[in-house]
Image 1 (cartoon, rainbow, N blue to C red):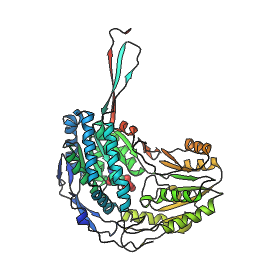
Image 2: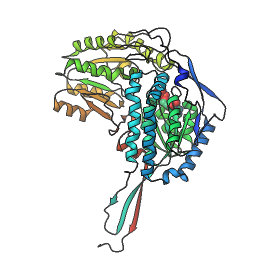
Image 3: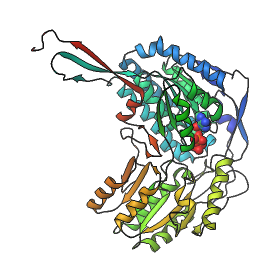
Image 4: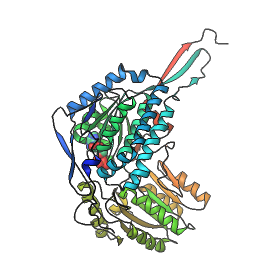
Length: 497
Ligand code: ADP
C-alpha cells in the first residue's frame, strides 16, 4: 500500500476550460436562485470548484428549451444522416482533447488516471461513433396483414428525455444515455451527479461546437431530491432514463407515474462470480480480483459475491488475499491500481460494511481500514468464510470489499446466486462447456460473462433483471428506450395485387 499523499497536481489548471454553470438552450448560465454547490477533490477533500446548482426553476427552463427544440427545432427534422455527422464530429472533438478529459475525470472522481485515459475516455469517443452510425439506420417495418391493408411502422423519437446519472463513471454514463437518445432524434435534459459534474460541462461545450443545436442537449448540475425530482415530475418530459441506486429508482418510478412517463432504470447489483473446478487458478484469481476492485469497487456490476468451488477454496482464498495485498492504493494521478473513493458518504458507508463483516464473523484476510489521514482512501479488503445471510454478502457495498463463499454442487450455487434480489450481471469461470451453458441459462441476470468480466462493448446490451432495473443500455437495444412505434395503415384498393 503506497502513500496516498497527493502529488503536485494543479486542479485550477486541469479545470481551466470547465465552465461551472448550467447549460440551457445553448448558453452557460447561472442558476435562477444564484446558488452554487462545492465540488471536492477526493484525494484531498479540498473544494476544487463551485458549480451552479440547478433547482426546479432551472429544470423548467431547460425542459422548456428541450421541448421547443424537439417540437419545432431542427434536430428531429434533420435526417438521421445529418444527426450522425454531428455525433461523429462530437466524438472527434472529444478525442482531440482526450487527455484533458482524462485529467478532469480523475480529479473529480478519484479513479486512476490510467483508467480514465485507457478506459473511460476512449470508450466515450467510440461510443458516440457507434451511435452516430445508428442515426441513419433506424427504420420501421413493413407488415404483412390480411391483404386489405398496407401497414407499416415508423420508429419515432420519444420526445424530451430526462436523464439522471451517477458519479462512478461520469462521462461513460453520460455516453450510455445521451448518445442513443440524440441518435434517435430526442432532445435531452441531463442531470449529472452532484459529486462529479465537471467533465460533462466541457463535453457540453464541445457538443455545441460540433453542431448540436441549442436546446437539444441541456446539462443541469445539482442534487437529486431537488433538481432530479423536479426533472422526473416535469410535465414537459416524455421519458426518464436513470442509472443509480435501487432506492432512488423506486422514487423515480413513483415520480414518473402521474405523467405516465416512459421509464428505464439501470440500478444496483450484487453480482456473483462463480469459479468452477478445473480452472487455471492464477488467471481466475486475477480476473475475479479485477472484477471486484476495478474503479475501487464502485461499479454497479462489481462481482461482489465470489463463489468458489470447495475443491479450490482454500488455495483461492490465500491467493486472492495475496493479490489484494499487492494492489497499490494512492494518488490516482500516480501509477496505482486504486485511488480514493468518491466522497465522504461513500467512504463512511464502505468502512461501515468492513466493520460489519468482521462483527458478523467473516474472516478478514486483509484490509478493513482507512489508508492515510486525508482523502477517501481505503484498503482493498478480502473476506472469506462469508455466509449468504451476512450483510456484506447481501447488500450492495460499492467499494473495494471482496466476499468469498464456498460452494459444492451446481444446483446449490445457482440457487444461491439467484437468491439475491438484484440481477445485473454474473461471471462464470469454467472450461466445461456444458456447465457454462447450464449456468448462463440458469442465472437470472442481464449479463453473464464467461471466462471474462466487465467485457463491455458498445454493441452488447447491458441492464438488469429483478431489482437491478429494466430497459437496456448499449447496442441496438438501447435505441428502443428512445423510440415510439407508430403503426400506419391504409386500405389497399386492389388487395389481389
Ligand atoms: P449513488 O448511490 O450511486 O450515488 P443515487 O441513486 O443516490 O446513486 O444517485 C444517482 C443519481 O440520482 C444522482 O444524479 C443523484 O443526484 C440522483 N438522485 C438522487 N435522489 C434522487 C431523487 N429523489 N430523484 C431524482 N434523482 C435523484
